[in-house]
Each structure stands twice: as structure tokens, then as C-alpha cells.
Image (cartoon, rainbow, N blue to C red; front, side, top):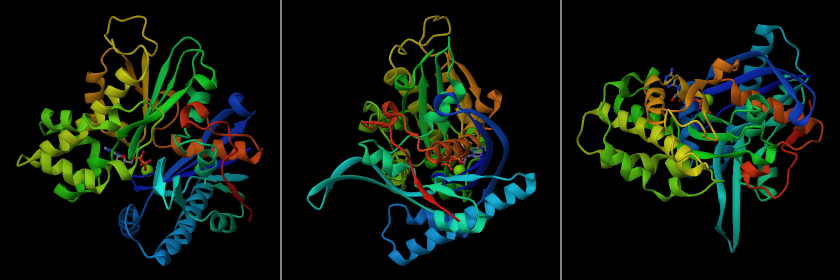
Length: 386
Ligand SMILES: Nc1ncnc2c1ncn2[C@@H]1O[C@H](COP(=O)(O)OP(=O)(O)O)[C@@H](O)[C@H]1O
Ligand SMILES: [Mg+2]
């Protein structure tokens, strides 16, 4: 079956479309990437999405954005299938997260955890004439999970290894890792958000340099890391909390960035960007060392580590300064990008939602309970027919 996956992440940089061929079922599924394209959001759309996260917004505008995104997703899929001349039978669309709260918190006398991805599946199905699975996260949360991360299912299929334990690290707006021990069964997979990915870097670069991101990490490369600020940020309770755990703009959004810039004080603008970049690298390294069992003593000579390899994906894999910092902090681990394993780093998450849609289409579960904390596997998403 040929399936398109559509992803637009918390960076709100744009829409990734991956077209994959899938054979087999569950953990034996074989996935072949046929095409991948990325479409940047028009600037006003990006600005609107970012401004809607964590804000008081008229409900009419939320409804409008839901339908507008359905159209933008459809155009992205159609452009991709036409360009590559591929017919698809199903679409899996993650949607745009506007709010995610993995932990239950008091609300109107009850304790509620919740999530909200927008981008209307019915619109996408009508325009493309293909059935759509969308809104994947609520079913996992209804089953007691945190609704994230959902990509570990794909990570397990693509990267499990009989002899080698592997860490798969995605650096999107938020950074999250999937740890797959050697010869792991699905229930041995551990996955969680390590903290900010590009989100803080993007916000700082926008404020100080009026650019949407730090291309190749060039600005950060010119700055000096303020270790004092890095230590201060890393002492926050989020980083120490044991997995499963999730993060979003609720933790690392506007308020966090304002505090962060203030703590940097009067220094060169490049130093602030370098420090934001170091927070991402250090929080990943901290998570690898302290939140994965048996990883405290990473050294180049250590031969018996449970995980010896880290494979990086997401837009952050293109940030050279960030990758250099990571390589230095995790010297002793072999560091690679998913590109080195045949999956472009910006196609992986989109491919994951194609796979999850495929599971749902056959009434099979797509969450990994050890990753999300759900009490049982759940069939994810809602189906819209053209
Ligand atoms: N060439 C690059 N150099 C540095 N950073 C990049 C580059 N390309 C993309 N990025 C970063 O990656 C982000 C997008 O990553 P992505 O994996 O799409 O995240 P999300 O899933 O949150 O949308 C951009 O906002 C930017 O910060
Ligand atoms: Mg993106």
C-alpha cells in the first residue's frame, strides 16, 4: 500500500510530505520511502500559528485555521503526488499542535490531560479524493498515555538492531529521543522529550536577528556559551523528571524565552544564540547520561555501554554547531544522521504518520505504551472519507 504522511511540527516552519510504500503488518512492516517534499508555510500563516499557541484567540479564528490548514495540507500532498507521479491510497496527517498537556491538571473540578491538533481531515480527504487518518494523539491519552511520542513505532521498525543498542534523537521544535536496546522487544523501548530542540533557538534568532532560524548554526558558531545560564536552565525540574515525559510551548515557549534572554544579561547577541543552542545539546546529553540506564559512564574506551550509537533527525540535524556540541558532549557514542541510514532527516516524522495511518486503516494499534505511558495499545486517529 502506498501512503502519504503529512507532518507540520511545533516549529511551524512548514509542511513535510513523505510518500512511502508499506508491506507487512505491525513490527514486521517494511517501509520504503518513495518521495519527500517540504513546503514552507507562507509567513503570515506561520506567524498566526505561532501566535495561537498558548494564547487567547477568538474561537472563530481557530475554526478558520482548522479549515485553512486542511487546504494547505491538501495542496502539499497534491503537489507531491503530481511531481513524483505516484498514486496514493491513504493519507496520515498529524495536524498542527496548538496545545499539548501530557500531564493531568485540575480543571473544573476534575483532573484533565489534553491535546489539540488542528487541520481538518475532511477537507484534506475531499480535496485529494483519498481517505485520511488524522488526530492520532487523543486515543493514546484516553488510554492513559501522554499522547506523545508516537514516532517510536517507526523508530523501532527502522532502527532496532540485534546486537547494538541505538538512540534515535529527533530535533524538531522540541527534541525527543527513542532508546532501543539491542534485540529489544517493543515493550523495552523507552522514549521521551529531552527538552527544547530548535524552538528556543528559533525564538531567540527571531528576536535578536529578525531571522526565522539560525541556518547551519552559523550565528551560534560566532558566539560564546554562557555556562552559568546553561546550568541554571538545566537545573529546572523538567530535565530531572523521569520518563515518560513530554514538553511543548507550554514549557519552552514565549515565557521561557523571555526569562532566558533576561538571564543572559548584556552580552553579544551571538552569545545568546550560542547559549540557546547549548541548552538543546546539553539537555540531550543530560538525558542520555542520566535518564537511560547504564549510560552514566560514557567514554570512548567504554565497551559495554547499552547504547553505542545515536542517530539524529529533524531540522536540528542540519545545525552544524548543535551537532558539533552534541558530538563533543557525547564523545564515546557513534553519532550519525538518519540520512546516513537512508531516511532524510526531515522526512522521518512525516513517514511515521504514514505508517501510523496504515496501522489504523487495518484496525491495529500504533502507540508504544512504554513510550507514552498508556495502559494498553490503542488504535490511533479518526478517519475521514472523500
Ligand atoms: N539548515 C538548517 N540549519 C539550522 N537549523 C535548521 C536548518 N534547517 C532547519 N533547521 C531548524 O529546524 C527547524 C524545523 O525542524 P523540524 O524538524 O521541521 O521541526 P518541527 O517538527 O517542530 O517542525 C527549523 O525551525 C530550524 O530551526
Ligand atoms: Mg517542521
